[in-house]
Length: 88
Length: 413
Image (cartoon, rainbow over all chains, first blue to last red; front, side):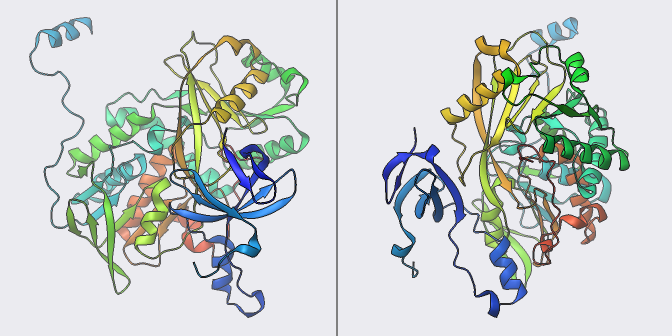
């Protein structure tokens, strides 16, 4: 069984989680061009690598960020959004 | 036939010549470089050579031909999609498939079985009715059928699904077929090679050179190639290639797992699909049941198999066919699905001059092989999008003109 560590509830089986897609900072919708907005809405960094992803722990309703190696399927670390470092 | 076999047995030379020649070295330049030696890339090479007379073409494949999605799908061919754009495109493909065995002089075991998409809920039934009407309007044979009809064609099915979501009806698509998928790649490869196309296996693209927004060359692990036209037909590996030319796309990669059971006597002629149960099942000409499921639930670039999948799929199979409980799974594998937000491909020209894309093939790539090859060959040869792929252009996203295809495999309704 694959285990993912929820930052609140600790290690839990992966069936308790829902994948929420790539973490992407949102541009200001009031001050952005249609192209930038479309890029934000649709485009993704689809190539393999270590990615920051949104994950949701169903049982406790916790959204958090996981750093996931999408080639090896290994979760490197997980943390709540407030602990994210934007300069990476 | 046995006499012929005996003659080969006594002959020192290997009976069948190789399907295509192995070129020794890459040339310095080609008119067109096709990245990806799967069904789509080889089909495009074939039609470029046959229909457009462009034979100075190299197909670059990092593994062996047909090693990606081409050899990993569940080999189903159908055209009962939901949108007019989709039906139009896939119908062209089904019609091309019918003649391929003769054209290649290679038996593709193309076998029309009839394709049932089961509806377990009112809303699914509504979508089936909608699909049937769109299909009929576009001239594709497709009809909504009731439980009695399904039971007559597939007597082994438990329509009550052990009282868990009983089947209410189905969309029946008689031209639905299965084919030998690797033979499709070989046939196109041989046909292209006979006309002068070079197929370079075990060659990895490491970069693409772009000058003044025009492609000028391809870097590979075996040297640099000059070219003005590049077709990327790499499905699950698309994001790595588009990154080389600085294009952003909505493609996200999810694995899709499938498996086959031990072979058994023929009992299932039809192809059965249930979106609610995330299951599609057919019996191959070898007698194995070929089964596929829904996408893996998160982004991943690995073709690993999971026990979760085997358990989930077996459970759902038993709800429809309880008598299979003693049947064993023989092997299990995964392929990479390049998913798009509207379940439609991304095809045609891009904003980088000379860079053509054939991607976003998610769970619907195999059945599209001939039509994709033909239309992409046209697009590359004329530097102009073929009219039936116009709705699938990459620019549809920035124009907010998505296609909204929900007839794709393993997509919930």
